[in-house]
Length: 114
Length: 114
Figure 1 (spheres, chains in turn yellow, red):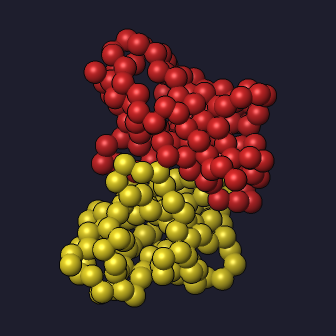
Figure 2 (tube, each protein chain N blue to C red; figure 1 turned 30 degrees about the horizontal axis):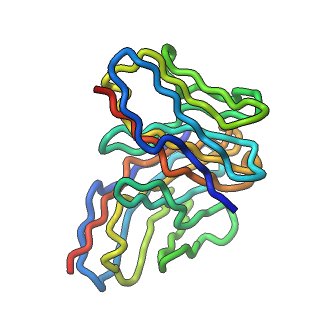
């Protein structure tokens, strides 16, 4: 079985400052890891994915995440927040022999102050 | 290249009625997943289907819920005799190959039971 814990339900930053959204996972097998973003009343958009290649993954809109197996973490970062980054972010794990269904974390709501 | 399509986007049903949610996967995708998002929560896996087959329905409630993905036409998630607790956003995702690609999400159907 796999699980995902997003350590902060809410994160508030000022525009132009760095963003850190924390995620820890648990998996019996080698996982694929994803970050999705959901804007209010919208669907989910894939930000980036890790599938056992490079451990530092670059995504869209300046986001990146680093897979750290020893820490079972996959934290999402961005050097400089923009107002348009305000949204809900989900860390997600997928395991091939579990039918590839996605297991979602509880989400982190990112607020960006002007 | 159209993305995953879901309809209706919003659905209002009275208690005891039936709800039918439709999902058309991306062209060339033969795997469909349904997820439910309750208010203020992350998405929870419900069911995984391939054409004419249910592969994994471990996340489906035992009663009133069913899903199909016929040879022709969209995937259907059916909820019979809806109750207030069924009010949620229901997301469909599709992927082209099991375990090889990320899942692409539709915009969701927001079901409200009055």
